[in-house]
Length: 85
Image 1 (cartoon, rainbow, N blue to C red):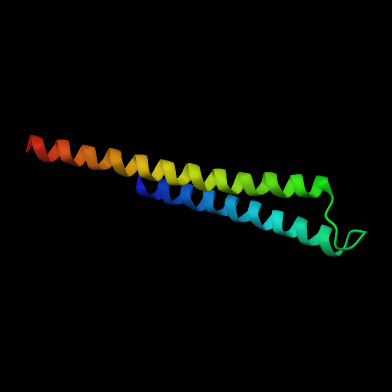
Image 2: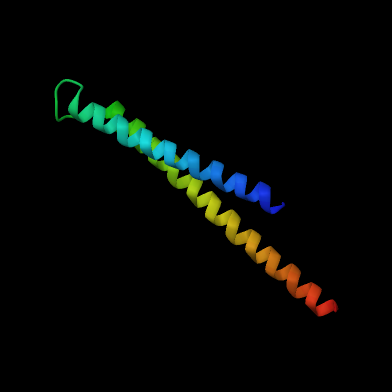
């Protein structure tokens, strides 16, 4: 994968993670302050917020795992190329 595609993928993953986190916080704030009775968050809102936060964590975890494996593969490839020279 070339560098340009990797940067685009990283930006996309980061954008989705930020959007899901922001949506979760927004839903929680709306339910807490604007939906009657004020100060109480319903179970459905809590489940939606938790699912959005899990999505955010999963996206960031997949990104970190992908980056680590890609770096390991590049290091092994460089090591083999250096050994052959």
